[in-house]
Length: 199
Image (cartoon, rainbow, N blue to C red; front, side, top):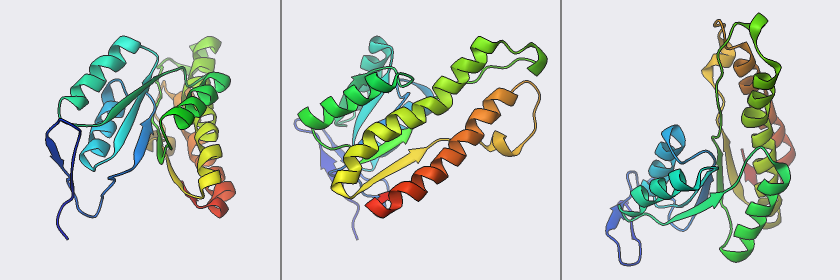
């Protein structure tokens, strides 16, 4: 089977990197994708043929990231919203689905780490970790899943961490949140498999 290529209107052909991983015609939302791992994931999904939706809170960073992908021929959308705000996340997803089209793939990538000795860890920093690393997965996951369930199809990928299986000093709250991501992922799979969703 030959590798599938796609072309953005007026742009260069972008060859699929693997014919067995063809995402032509699919749209993927990647949270926290204005830089770092999220942007790298978005680039990989573009290489496989998907249109991508970049997400972040900083519109300028998001614009620069989108331009870097679009210059290579990718189809790129941008959604500027705070993944830690349930209402805002749901509104952003609902508007995109209504105006642009379905979100076929969600990658819950947004996350942060804060290091400090546990006995000195500030409560505000702990709450920020909870909101960013676990509440965001619930917020965006639920918002996107509502639409996927109606269509009977969709894929959700949640980014956890190998640190949940390790013991390292100064990152206990981080590992706790990533462990929660793993358990929430199991729950999503259990609740939503019957609707055709793959988690």
